[in-house]
Length: 250
Image (cartoon, rainbow, N blue to C red):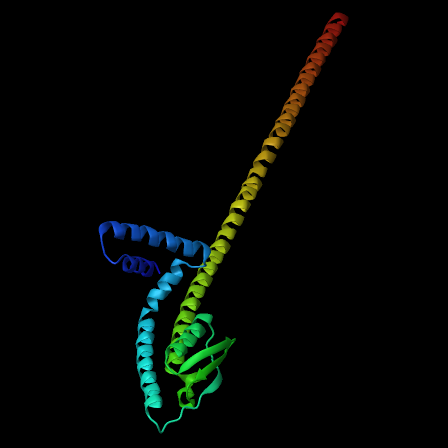
């Protein structure tokens, strides 16, 4: 579309200069931005059109050939006195899905001499033919086959893009699911460290108790020894007094 706008700009100017090319680049860029911003156009569609160029060139070539053939048929009907044209309205249904393909088919029928598209409602065409012979095989013409190829190509492109989106979504989900166990492990690690730290706290709490019990036991032993010493001293004094009394009696 950008190149088309730029080429139209050059054709309208009628000459190629540096100033005209610069202005054409700027104006084409502005119009392209307007199309993308307000008319549901995008770079993806631009790339798709470039990929469809071989089909479009083939379609244009077939259209020119059919126009030439239709001109020859119409000339025969006009110039031969023996042939009498039999006009008719022909209705047929098409298997085309997109509105663009239906519009291209309707325009192609109108461009070929001897046939005019009267109406298009849904998938049903109404065509006015100069003669019945011109309407034969219209629903399975070369135009319909080429347009169906274009639709299948566009559909395959959309399916590939959709599959890529699905793959990216699945990869992101898998990455998230892989990241969740790591978070759980990081959450459980503080708990494990707390459980490991608890026995140390218990030991630190029991150590003062053990020290107090040891001190009490030592104090008991000291008191027992002191009492034993006192008893020994008292027993010695008593023995000395008894000896003195016995010596005094003697």
